[in-house]
Length: 379
Image (cartoon, rainbow, N blue to C red; front, side):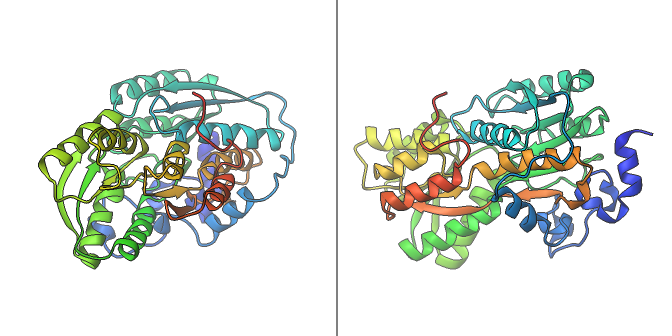
């Protein structure tokens, strides 16, 4: 009997924490569940588990109870070659927390860009075939639905534990769920942004969306934001452009908006790379100060732009939460404490904006990047 089957057999009461009994999910259903192809975290997490692991992540490290003799082997398949420093910061936070936990480790990275779906598939197949080399595999999908088969393939492999980074909506049709998911809720970020933008800018705003790639993440970051400001503030979406999460896509989309839709006064960008490209286009057109521009994620590049008053607002993830939580979850798995874990870990999101003082932004940054360090990363 393999380890995953054994855990499933002895942990029936805690199936949300193992990810091995997908047929037993959800623990509960929220309104609209039948229409969704995925579960929300509240549907698959036992009450209180996210709060508890967040408390652990925010506290001083407690070293692993049983010494680990050999380095834990960790493979990372993720789009870390993109502009966003989320991936690099998650990696740094994870490794530094592992050091604090006295867990020796070795990592192997398989990097790609967000739009390189086939390259990620190649990496997933390679890691699956080399399962004897790894204890844990961390997969950061280029897009969730596109990589669903690869998630399923990795999760089926009994040679290692499989974690998913940057998504918190387990797809219902994944036959074998990974062991744990780690993310910040884009839905929560969209709601926070909607609240802030309506309070600051009021109603009846003509605006445009620079969207990412069609899929869950963009539906939440862009679509749910658009629905909220329309319903609550009667905002008018004049134009939407898919920039594929790239700097070039943000630049091209913003240029089109500036040239063809002069009535637009606000541009909502769905990630860092597109926000940076959009800022370049606004600056080149001499429109700085005329167009309100948002980012997404609160990365180092975005915070620097807010300090310079070039970017107006962003939903800021407490970025190191994901990496630090991953280290803690590795510890829990090594100690056989999976039943204490949420199936989906969520980090915190706050709003950073150009109305904050430098000191206030610095304080947010210190908390968010307590492991990976403040400021833009040298990459």
